[in-house]
Image 1 (cartoon, rainbow, N blue to C red):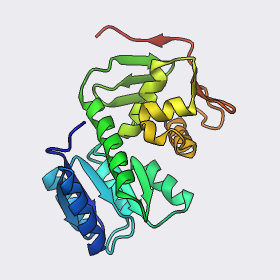
Image 2 (image 1 turned 45 degrees about the vertical axis):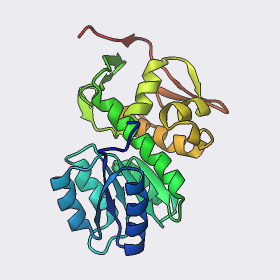
Image 3 (image 1 turned 30 degrees about the vertical axis):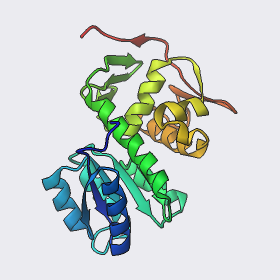
Length: 239
């Protein structure tokens, strides 16, 4: 999605000053913005207003932000970017595992936030274009048109970012893909040095797709280089 025109962003944060700064900057860039100071208001707005993206603080006065992620993911694939002072890696992993698409630690710059928003919206837009074929790789079946992934016939839920990373792997089966290549393909050139970021998402995909994430069958690590999506046969059935 190259233009912000018509894109709706829901800001969820209990700090009035942060809501105000974010609203002014996002509206200046053409986004439609609604704000919520607590979790219950956020969930009501998400259900009524159907935002295209949610910016979510974890420290809310009534509900924990992780519970908000869980509730939104139960009914929608809308991109969620966490904005929080919680900087511990376990907090980030918990939010990402529940289905958040991105995580920014406060304080952060508006330019970086806008870059993350562009990435999240681009992933969501690609999923909605309906151009991806049905692909089978071993026991994994991927239909990006229907946003559906199954492993051994069991459906698993992926976020838009996870779908995009898997799509890149499937487009280059059995080839070594460097960290920088994957970061630029999935997140864009702004993130070409964020190797730790990629590793978190690879771990999430392994957890959802691999029979044993500790002994990966599909997403293999190439030490010091990157990753290889290993399959004996990649099938693209006729539709």
